[in-house]
Length: 79
Picture (tube, rainbow, N blue to C red):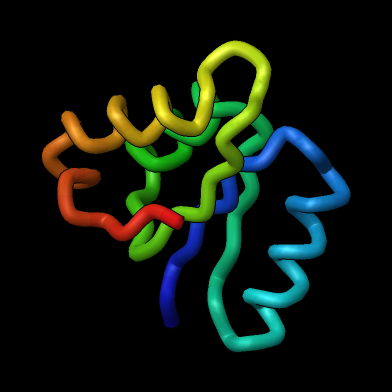
């Protein structure tokens, strides 16, 4: 089972993605900010990340850059 992290500040959008991905058989967690996404990623690790770009605080671009410097996040696909 693929572990997927959805980083999205809109609860509606995050839940929509979660429903779609879980119906396809994936294990999905949601983070509502880039900071929370990094914390969750460090704690669990994921096979795939979906990230919003425009978020308060840490943007999706900043999140991706921070993820890439982590040894465990360097090769994880981000959409």
